[in-house]
Image 1 (cartoon, rainbow over the protein chains, first blue to last red):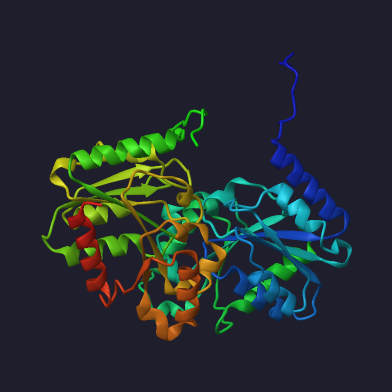
Image 2 (image 1 turned 135 degrees about the horizontal axis):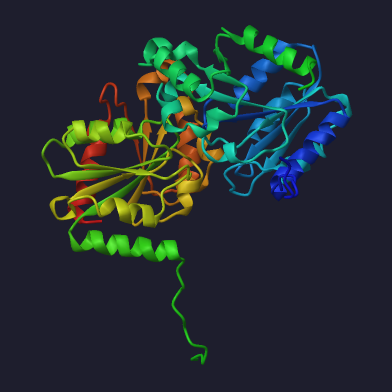
Length: 220
Length: 220
């Protein structure tokens, strides 16, 4: 049976349309973008710096840093590590959106970059609702935040491709039930790859860097 | 010189008007309310539980727990500690607002309580913008989040009366510059009282409990 009702494409919001444009622009220059989300202090910038060190000269990358305040603390660290970085001040806003990231991408030499890391505002709630135009999404959790976070902030874990569990060097000093944490994540997102690691000792960093390298090589 | 321009009272937003009504309702029953804000995993619920233990039977209190998800993990812990607790599910929203807290207060026996602790959603950005009707505001920071948080999330520290720095038992294992952290806080809020403490060892808990007891005794 056929229907006479015309099938209309899904109408995307302004943000989603601009996110799609960001992705097209990245594709045109052969650049893959990763959206990195986390709670404040989970170690986003530390993971980026250890990732840069771990990648060595595998491929060139750039970083878009989202901050609620007028500070360049994070971008300065990336620049000191020898990579191009752009700071976006959200003016108090609690998340990055596609227009902000469009502005950041415009200031990076995309044709020279194979990867752009978008460091979102530190927030486990709001960034989940905004497509910024990245090809994949990663959340960084950290051991001191506690093993119950997947149960209390479920939305952020649903759409991600990988989960980094940072600060595993603190496991001896903190009550953290790894199985309870893993169960919480897998209940929300059965296919996600989990990388327990430490930016302090570099334990587990190799597996994460390998995964990221494959992702960039595959172009998505 | 007098002016002919009529002086009009500041027109408050719907949220602010309802927050004022919440405060009036609390005042009418002789109850003081504290709004507790923090990053996810800073230890809000642990601080509440150790505060209940530290207060002993000084005065009766109740807790309003804000969560983005349908979980009663935190409220169950407070109930197990023998105090009335209400769970508010924000339906994914990133902060509590005055209408939500109004709903929570309606389920507590306010006439029997001297203090209501409002545990906001774990978020260092959005809760700062919403008056919920509390008499004073407290932020819980934690050592593993890092010493640079006041510089990166300034807004939340501006309107608070006390700052708890939790998890000081982890100081030996983490690079945390206490002077840099204190300078950042005092730059934003010179009058705030800072309480470094540990819910694990109870170190510093006494000074915090004394401050809270005085606040409740003074009725604001």
